[in-house]
Length: 388
Ligand code: PLP
Image 1 (cartoon, rainbow, N blue to C red):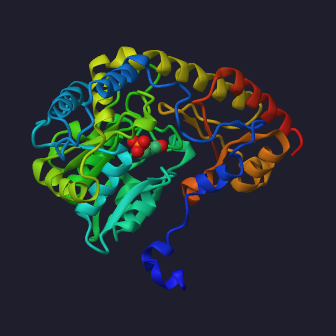
Image 2 (cartoon, helix red, strand yellow):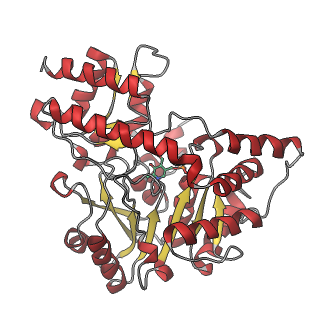
């Protein structure tokens, strides 16, 4: 069988995720310290697991409404109202999804006609560019710079907007750089979106994980932005619920309705057990993730100071659980550096280029790993760079 001719052409042009390729090398190796996959090292808090167990014990094993449980949608809108200060109607403006991953895919497929351009800041989450291409859109990246703490500057955004630009994708705090945006830049970006009549997809998955006592501001809450914004969020990161696969989208009703059509035919509904668990997570709120957040904060400070002490330039990211040190001084590509580091010292960190070309010269180290392992990884890093 000539499978090549059978598989959709646009899919064949999309490369596999650089992270997965890299981590296939590491799977099953107990000797390796992984600063790799962006997944909390904490187990989902017991209160949330208990709610899921109890739901199963009660025999709650059915489908739910396509949009998700009414009680969860109401709770989500209450949480979004309090946390992001933007208000949605649970009955018509909220869709419960299988992670932010599904919400992102639905939003792009609901919005794009072939050839529409989608702009996003880079380095960025590995799925942005492929998700746009799979929805027949054209990915357009704007490189962000170390000097700006990898935040998106309105001037840089203005340069790539064309007649064909339909959507702007934002993710602050950012995977893989931990970057955050200043209120001033966020306002400048919002102004451009209004001027060019863009729809904004704002991926808020790391919003709770902001450090230094700073509060997160979402573009959805700025004047004139609610009507043109789809707010995407989920439970994987702050609530340590990756395996529950639960997220949501909040947006004006016509946009949710369009996304719901795809969700209804493709997925039907998010799993009921996960929805019940998510409801419990929101009832518990900040106290249930505070300790994890404090631990990440401490680990970030440790990594940034160790890296800078050993002469590796690393900005202190305002959020998420990644640092993005500059390793360009060693004269190796990001991929070569990561491979040699893995071979020599058995530490896995992701080459910056897995997140786009502008990640060349950088390494992503995820600190959702225990402090003892982080200390050991930094000792090994110091030993490794002394050999270069
Ligand atoms: N968006 C960003 C920026 C991420 O880093 C991730 C996961 O790493 C996701 C979305 C996917 O999240 P979920 O587990 O909710 O599908």
